[in-house]
Image (cartoon, rainbow, N blue to C red; front, side, top):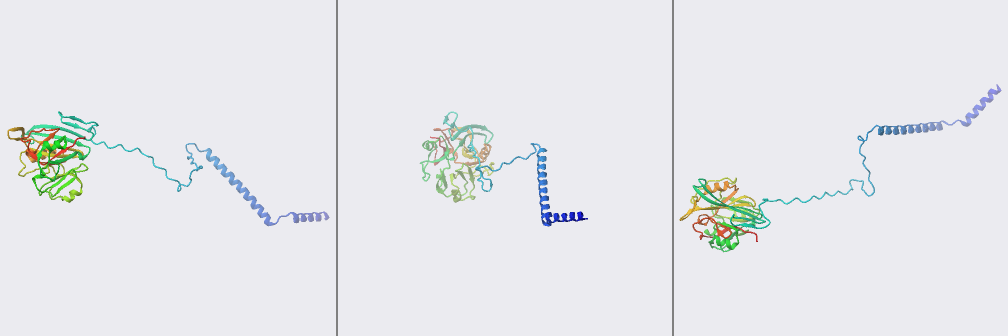
Length: 352
């Protein structure tokens, strides 16, 4: 019995000295559980990562995006834009390839002329039962790199003067390689005259069509009543002629023209294809003893001829004995009266 009492006392003493309180016990248990959970979580992550990499092929893996390196800006908002690559300049547009020549070439017999800015070729046509019973006409096909190569010259060099001379004389003094008669502005006291960009008269002739050659190389005709001189002047034209009539409609189709001067006669006309491409046309006529082998042409037939040539715009100029074509020093078409005097010409100025 004594032994039992002593053992019980010893146990109570040990409990009193070594037993932790409840708070310490709970804290210890919580810490132990936390460590265990962390260890388990860490082991799970490592295990999943190892499984993912070991089961993924190289082709299926996403590309690695490198991070910023030293000297680079990581923030895209603050990064300077990359300059666009410099492209080589576009090659210049070649207008009328093969038409111009680096050196001047004049073939007087073939009636051709080439330079770096001008190309001229003249053909003569002799036909029957087309535009007339018999007809001889001359077509000068003209290409220019600059519209200022198409010039006009007055009989005495001043369009403000009333003066007349022969076509050959005016053309020779102007240094022309090719020329035809103009609109004979001196036949009336008032008219609408702009020549080589200079305004001389600003009063259009009543009931008369005008022809405008603009500085950009385009050409158009305008009917009386559809324009004012001020509007035309404001468009900065290079040439304005006032004889007429216009030979084609707005779509470039032939039109019927009937008035007192619409019968068979020698004719002169200027035609337009596109900016930089034009033609001068002369139609011979039977004039007295000097038979040219041509009956002349009616205005309606001249309209059809210009349409058949492919012109988009065409304009009638002074006809009769005035209708003359000058080429390199001489009149090449047949005319009754080469000595016929006129006030002005349209010509091509060759390169110097």
